[in-house]
Amino acid sequence: MKAKSRVLDEDAIVERLIPKIEDRVRADIIRGIIASLEEQLYPSEESFRKSFVERVKKAGKSKGAIFKTKKELEAHLRSIGG
Image (cartoon, rainbow, N blue to C red):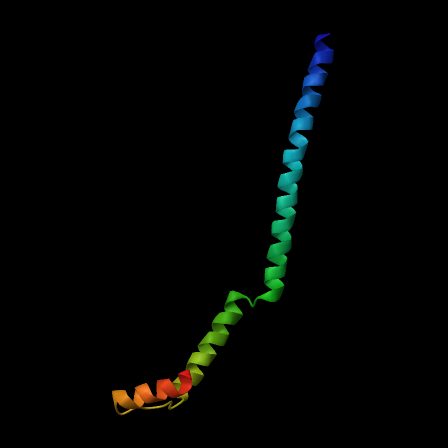
């Protein structure tokens, strides 16, 4: 009878573990899908960095607007703010 009760105990343990294992596997799959989508939707950090550096260099070459007084700056900010 010991062997039979041992099998029942193992079956009970397996039945309790299956939902936990399924949840972990499901979570791992979902994390993998999310990571894959992020790689496809968002640029890599390296390409983002290159793009940022190029924009900064381009902005550095621009003369931009120069304001002689605080009032000129305030007037400009009001004009673009609405």
